[in-house]
Amino acid sequence: MRIKITSDGRVLQGTAKQIVEAMQYVAFGQQDRTLTEYIDWAAEQASRMNEVDLRITGNSDEERAESLVRAMLEAGLAERL
Image (cartoon, rainbow, N blue to C red; front, side, top):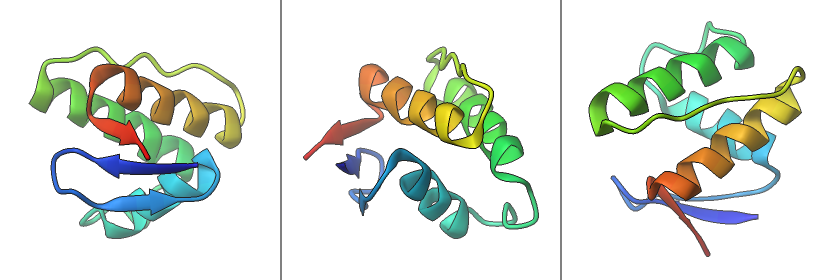
């Protein structure tokens, strides 16, 4: 999968989990969080800053990452390339 983050034009590629891991890597001060904690934080920040409701589902990191990427695409925060 390949997506473009609409806010900054960054292009990320890989599985949903790899994409979210890359997002976490560049997010200031978020490297010490678990991936699940980061996903929850990212969804909350996106909701607060963009006034969208990103509902994250799933139990595993993979499922939650897929849910976050899908929600970002549906909300227009990212676009599939």
